[in-house]
Amino acid sequence: MQQYILFGWDGTDENALERRMAVRPAHFKNAKRLKESGNFIFGGAILDDKGKMIGSNMIMQFETRDELQQWLDTEPYITGKVWEKFELHPYKVADV
Image 1 (spheres, rainbow, N blue to C red):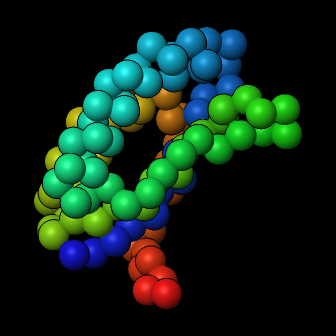
Image 2: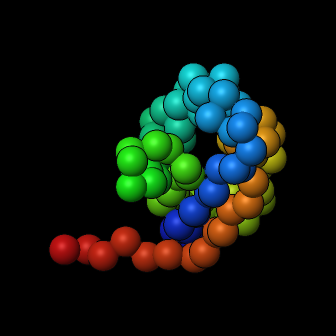
C-alpha cells in the first residue's frame, strides 16, 4: 500500500472553529472506518500556541490512487469546508 501524509489547515474566519466542531463527529466516524480497514495509521489536530485547533494531520495508506480519491471526495473536513487548504504527499512510515 502507498502511504500518504496530509496536512489540513482550517479556515481563519470567525466561523472556522464552529464548522470544525459541527462535522467533527462525522470526521471521527470516517477515521474510525479507515482505521478498521487498515487505511488510517495516525492522525490528530494541529494546535496553535494557545492550544486552539488550527488544522489536522493524518497518515494513511491506500492500495490505489482511486481509493485515496474516494476518501478525499467524502472526507467531512473537506466537504464541510473545515480545511481551507490541504497538502497531500506520498510518505513512508519508518519501520523501527
